[in-house]
Amino acid sequence: MRRTIWEIPTTEKEGMLVPARIYATEQLFNAMDETVYDQITNVATLPGITKYALCMPDGHSGYGFPIGGVAAMDVERVG
Image 1 (cartoon, rainbow, N blue to C red):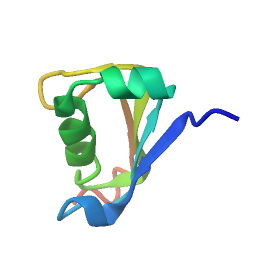
Image 2: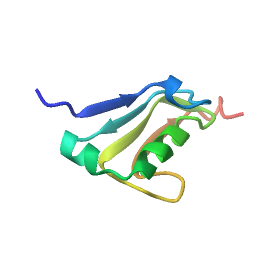
Image 3: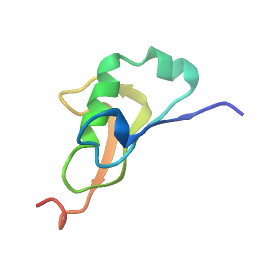
Image 4: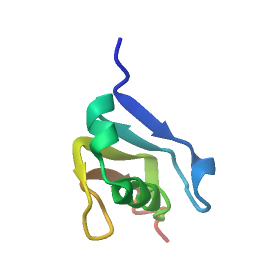
């Protein structure tokens, strides 16, 4: 079975509240810009984020949040 979920643990970057997950084949994952990795781990530090910061197979660099990124927030935990 091919690996399609790449999980980045909370220990990867200071302040991460949840793990980050990138959904992609190895070929797509390897083609992603390093900025995508940095941005999705930054998303994982946002107040109120729940469960995971997610990046879909079409992920590419955005303006602080990767295009193809998804995050759910608990507004009562935001602050």
